[in-house]
Image (cartoon, rainbow, N blue to C red; front, side):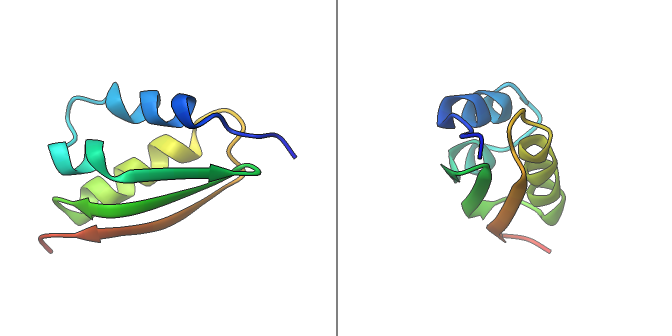
Length: 72
């Protein structure tokens, strides 16, 4: 199984300047093509967007979105 480099997933998220500081700082854990997202984000839309960004990163086969939204 292809390993997704942590830096590749992280850099993809950091390039998106529309995300809040919380979304930029939330954890990214990569293992065997699975990316796990953990931590707070400002809104549900940010959670969905962050998941989409990671899913589109080369080598990602699955995203486990465990992000917590601060607002509905």
